[in-house]
Each structure stands twice: as structure tokens, then as C-alpha cells.
Length: 139
Length: 178
Ligand SMILES: [Zn+2]
Image (cartoon, rainbow over all chains, first blue to last red; front, side):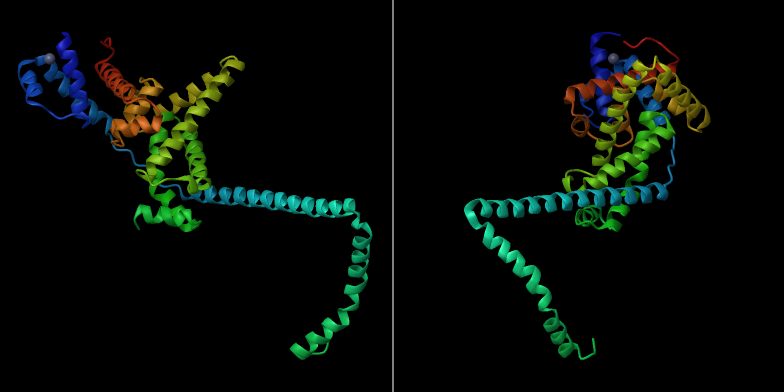
């Protein structure tokens, strides 16, 4: 096989797979070259061998499994995100309190905490009374 | 329903749409991985892994080309990673893994109806086989294959040509490739 034929074979492979178009020049060469004509037939034959039917049924079980696994992974990710957010907020809050303490507001903070802890339970009867009025049943 | 609509819905966390997308692309993906690995168990595992990665990363999917192209790109990368891992395993376990893998492959080829086709494909080196499969079975252009495999177009073209030559040689019964 000469070099020209090698080049034509390359072009023929591109033409076979739609990457190049058949030109008059190639057609002329094919008419006069038995080797390249043979190569064309072999390409056709190869294509037929490759194109034997292959039936692949859908495995719905695998797809369901994938969806369930993905849901699990997403849930885990969301838990981690929530935990990170909680840690961030808690650190911020503690940092804020520590900052106020450093600025000399320790006493008022303690008083505020005391009031909150003692005062809030005292408002319970009021809350219950308001609810009773609103919903109209005996608590 | 059209694919791009399903993709849009899946991106908005619509599980049913995602499931439909996977169902309609299952055979394409599995067929591709089966021809790539020549091993049904491995193809099953890779199919599952590829689909899981697709579900988890659907928000990153850009509507360029077909959805199956994206799946095939993920599958190709996962297969490549696995080959790399297996090579390391083989090296450390004194070729035991390679022998096992080879046996499974042979068994599969003997079993299936289209064994002849698989036997022929097996003769082509992996990086050339992938190009032939994408070209012949999925009709991707050189440009698309170059994008999927992250390779220059010239390399894709010469790999396809090489694969064709190997195939023809195998079909003729083993003459030298020129
Ligand atoms: Zn010629």
C-alpha cells in the first residue's frame, strides 16, 4: 500500500463516521484503486459486526436504590449543615456575652439572667388565662 | 415529556422527574459501560455509581448537549478512576486482582449471545475502545468525544482510526496493522 492510499483510508474512515464528505477526488480514487475499494467493504463489514443488537432492559430496582441512597446522602449533608450553623450561632452568642463581660457588663447580664429565669415562670398564669379566654375551655 | 423539561424539574428537586431521567437514559449508560468494562458486575456497579453522582450533582449540570452525554462523561471518569485504583491494587497484591478480573471477563464473554462482538471489542486497547464506542454506538462527533474525554480532536481521530484498524485485523484473523 502506498502513502496516498494510507491517506485515502484515513479520509474514508472519517467519511464512514460522518466527519468528512465524499469528494469527487475520493470517488475517482476508489474507482481506480482496488485496495481502497476493499477497505471500504471492510469498513462496512466491521460496522455490521459492531451493530449486532443489544437489548438492555431498565433495572428499576437499581434506579430506586440510587434515589434512596441519594436521599440518605442529602439528609446527612443537611444534618451536617444544621449542626455547623448551630455551632456558629452558639459561638457567636457566647462570644457576644464574653465581650460584654469584658466590657464590664457582667453584673447587668447576671441580673438579666436572674430576671428571665425567675420572672418568666411567673407569667405562666397570665399565659394560661389568656389562652383560656381565647379558646374557651378549662385548663 | 421532553428531556430539558425533566432536567429543569429535577434541578428543582423534583424526585419523580429525576427518576424519569434516569430511566430513559439507563440503557444508554449501561450499554456504554458494559462495552467499556466487558464485565457485567462492574458495569452494574459503575452504572449505579454514575447515576448517584448525577442525582447528587444535578444542580451543577449545564444544559449543554444531551443528558446522556453528561452521564457518559461521569461514567467515563469513574471508570478511569477505578482502573487507576485497580492498577495500584494489582501492583500491591502481586497481580491477583488482575487474574480475577480477567477470569470474570472471559466468563462473561463466553456466556453472552453477542460474545463475538465483545471478543472483538476486547482486542482494542481501552483508550481507543472508548472512542470507537462513543463514535459508533452513540454517534458523537469528534468534538463531543474530545470534550467527554478531555483530549485534543487530533488524538480522538487517530485513536478511532487505530481502533478500526485493530478491529479489521481481528476480523481478518490477525494480520499486522500498518
Ligand atoms: Zn488506494
